Length: 146
Image 1: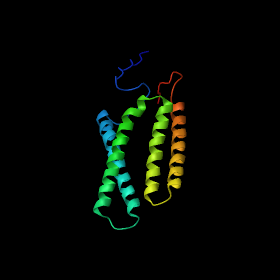
Image 2: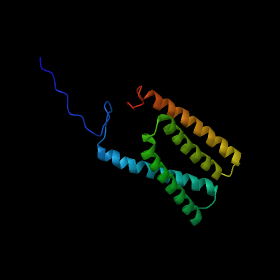
Image 3: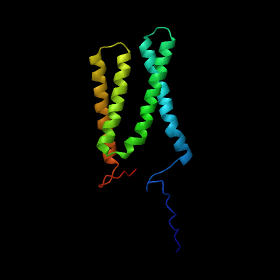
Image 4: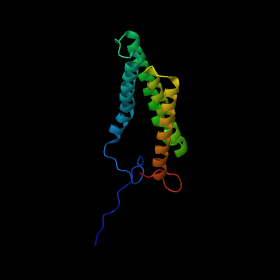
Protein backbone atom coordinates (compact mmCIF):
# COMPACT_ATOMS: atom_id res chain seq x y z
CA UNK A 1 0.00 0.00 0.00
CA UNK A 2 1.40 3.40 -0.97
CA UNK A 3 1.61 6.34 1.39
CA UNK A 4 2.05 9.99 0.60
CA UNK A 5 5.54 11.34 1.11
CA UNK A 6 5.86 14.20 3.60
CA UNK A 7 6.11 17.60 1.96
CA UNK A 8 9.05 19.94 2.41
CA UNK A 9 8.97 22.21 5.44
CA UNK A 10 9.13 25.91 4.86
CA UNK A 11 11.95 27.70 6.64
CA UNK A 12 9.85 30.57 8.00
CA UNK A 13 7.20 28.51 9.80
CA UNK A 14 7.29 26.68 13.07
CA UNK A 15 6.13 23.08 12.87
CA UNK A 16 2.53 22.61 13.86
CA UNK A 17 1.36 26.14 13.09
CA UNK A 18 -1.56 26.79 10.80
CA UNK A 19 -1.29 29.76 8.48
CA UNK A 20 -4.64 30.91 7.15
CA UNK A 21 -3.20 33.86 5.28
CA UNK A 22 -0.12 34.36 3.11
CA UNK A 23 3.15 35.82 4.35
CA UNK A 24 2.33 39.05 2.49
CA UNK A 25 -0.95 39.40 4.40
CA UNK A 26 0.83 38.81 7.71
CA UNK A 27 3.41 41.45 6.77
CA UNK A 28 0.69 43.99 5.99
CA UNK A 29 -1.14 43.14 9.22
CA UNK A 30 2.08 43.63 11.21
CA UNK A 31 2.06 47.23 10.01
CA UNK A 32 -1.70 47.86 9.88
CA UNK A 33 -2.59 46.63 13.38
CA UNK A 34 -0.43 49.19 15.26
CA UNK A 35 -1.60 51.99 12.95
CA UNK A 36 -5.29 51.22 13.45
CA UNK A 37 -4.86 50.76 17.20
CA UNK A 38 -2.91 54.04 17.34
CA UNK A 39 -5.70 55.90 15.53
CA UNK A 40 -8.34 54.52 17.89
CA UNK A 41 -6.20 55.24 20.96
CA UNK A 42 -5.38 58.78 19.82
CA UNK A 43 -9.04 59.58 19.17
CA UNK A 44 -10.00 58.12 22.55
CA UNK A 45 -7.33 60.14 24.39
CA UNK A 46 -8.33 63.35 22.60
CA UNK A 47 -12.01 62.75 23.39
CA UNK A 48 -11.18 62.20 27.07
CA UNK A 49 -8.97 65.29 27.19
CA UNK A 50 -11.58 67.67 25.75
CA UNK A 51 -14.17 66.34 28.24
CA UNK A 52 -17.19 66.99 26.02
CA UNK A 53 -16.00 70.37 24.80
CA UNK A 54 -15.40 71.45 21.22
CA UNK A 55 -12.67 69.94 19.07
CA UNK A 56 -9.79 72.39 18.79
CA UNK A 57 -6.53 72.36 16.91
CA UNK A 58 -4.58 71.56 20.05
CA UNK A 59 -6.95 68.73 20.86
CA UNK A 60 -6.52 67.29 17.36
CA UNK A 61 -2.72 67.62 17.62
CA UNK A 62 -2.79 65.94 21.05
CA UNK A 63 -4.77 63.00 19.68
CA UNK A 64 -2.51 62.70 16.64
CA UNK A 65 0.70 62.69 18.69
CA UNK A 66 -0.75 60.33 21.28
CA UNK A 67 -1.80 57.90 18.56
CA UNK A 68 1.59 58.17 16.85
CA UNK A 69 3.47 57.37 20.07
CA UNK A 70 1.10 54.50 20.87
CA UNK A 71 1.43 53.01 17.36
CA UNK A 72 5.21 53.31 17.45
CA UNK A 73 5.51 51.61 20.83
CA UNK A 74 3.04 48.92 19.80
CA UNK A 75 5.02 48.18 16.62
CA UNK A 76 8.28 47.98 18.56
CA UNK A 77 6.73 45.63 21.13
CA UNK A 78 5.26 43.41 18.42
CA UNK A 79 8.78 42.93 17.03
CA UNK A 80 10.79 42.69 20.27
CA UNK A 81 8.49 40.90 22.72
CA UNK A 82 8.25 37.48 20.97
CA UNK A 83 12.05 37.14 21.20
CA UNK A 84 11.99 37.38 25.01
CA UNK A 85 11.37 34.67 27.58
CA UNK A 86 7.75 34.14 28.59
CA UNK A 87 8.05 36.06 31.88
CA UNK A 88 9.55 39.17 30.31
CA UNK A 89 7.19 38.88 27.33
CA UNK A 90 4.13 38.86 29.58
CA UNK A 91 5.39 41.64 31.87
CA UNK A 92 6.30 43.86 28.91
CA UNK A 93 2.81 43.63 27.38
CA UNK A 94 1.25 44.02 30.83
CA UNK A 95 3.25 47.18 31.51
CA UNK A 96 2.37 48.59 28.09
CA UNK A 97 -1.35 47.97 28.55
CA UNK A 98 -1.32 49.25 32.13
CA UNK A 99 0.42 52.48 31.14
CA UNK A 100 -1.95 52.95 28.21
CA UNK A 101 -5.07 52.49 30.36
CA UNK A 102 -3.68 54.64 33.16
CA UNK A 103 -2.99 57.45 30.70
CA UNK A 104 -6.49 57.24 29.23
CA UNK A 105 -8.09 57.34 32.67
CA UNK A 106 -5.87 60.28 33.64
CA UNK A 107 -7.09 62.24 30.60
CA UNK A 108 -10.69 62.01 31.80
CA UNK A 109 -9.94 64.41 34.69
CA UNK A 110 -10.04 61.87 37.51
CA UNK A 111 -7.57 61.62 40.37
CA UNK A 112 -4.05 60.39 39.80
CA UNK A 113 -4.57 57.67 42.39
CA UNK A 114 -7.52 56.26 40.46
CA UNK A 115 -5.63 56.23 37.17
CA UNK A 116 -2.60 54.63 38.84
CA UNK A 117 -4.76 51.98 40.52
CA UNK A 118 -6.57 51.10 37.29
CA UNK A 119 -3.27 51.03 35.40
CA UNK A 120 -1.69 48.71 37.96
CA UNK A 121 -4.73 46.45 38.02
CA UNK A 122 -4.74 46.26 34.22
CA UNK A 123 -1.00 45.56 34.11
CA UNK A 124 -1.29 42.80 36.71
CA UNK A 125 -4.26 41.18 34.99
CA UNK A 126 -2.75 41.29 31.50
CA UNK A 127 0.61 40.02 32.76
CA UNK A 128 -0.99 37.11 34.62
CA UNK A 129 -3.20 36.18 31.67
CA UNK A 130 -0.36 36.33 29.13
CA UNK A 131 2.05 34.44 31.38
CA UNK A 132 -0.52 31.65 31.67
CA UNK A 133 -1.05 31.63 27.92
CA UNK A 134 2.66 31.58 27.09
CA UNK A 135 3.36 28.98 29.78
CA UNK A 136 0.70 26.61 28.46
CA UNK A 137 1.80 27.03 24.83
CA UNK A 138 5.46 26.06 25.30
CA UNK A 139 7.23 22.74 25.50
CA UNK A 140 9.58 21.67 28.29
CA UNK A 141 12.54 23.51 26.74
CA UNK A 142 10.71 26.84 26.47
CA UNK A 143 10.08 26.77 22.71
CA UNK A 144 6.71 28.03 21.58
CA UNK A 145 4.42 25.40 20.12
CA UNK A 146 1.12 26.65 18.82
